[in-house]
Image (cartoon, rainbow, N blue to C red):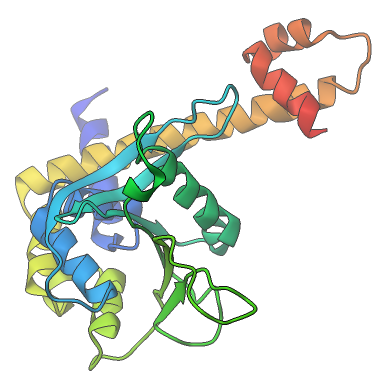
Length: 271
């Protein structure tokens, strides 16, 4: 690639970076990855606390499903506090990405990793699955939606330690900590942000040489990932059409489209 082409790609990447917000995975992952202080601020605001102490914060932690062919998940921000409680923070711009069943699945995947063999079930720690959504997916205009199990007949809490919270990313109220936080998540300019800790991190990744280098790498990796995902979807589409031909075996279809046999088998099951 010529220097002129490299310069052009760099300028394109910098334009993309200038428009990124904390609601975008690329920027959010870099800001919160291994950043105890920023993650602590985020969770204390959402949980309306001041005393929560984060011990670990990791972006893009993968939870593999041990069941053959089972779906795995990648957590946007994984955190653990001083009481061993686990937090899964997901940022979703598309409403379909914040489906209620997805929250349930994330919660169950986290639970399966909490206990070791023969540990008592009472030893399982509380878990929080937190969805920060660009739109108000529940639709009543509130800043927060807490989902906890209850005993329907009595109305009492069913205290199993499992919690799901939806944060309305479109909520606007500059006198409310949640409103300020969501304002900052929507900001493209760190100078306009309320929370100086978040503004400092966003400024670093958008305006310093080292930060921009990391951001450019993340942007290019995301572009490659999306291209791979589109190619995979196209292969699956072609395979689905080929399955309509009874004369073609699963093995032949797998060979022709370049997919593993188990992927074709899953397509058959879904049909």
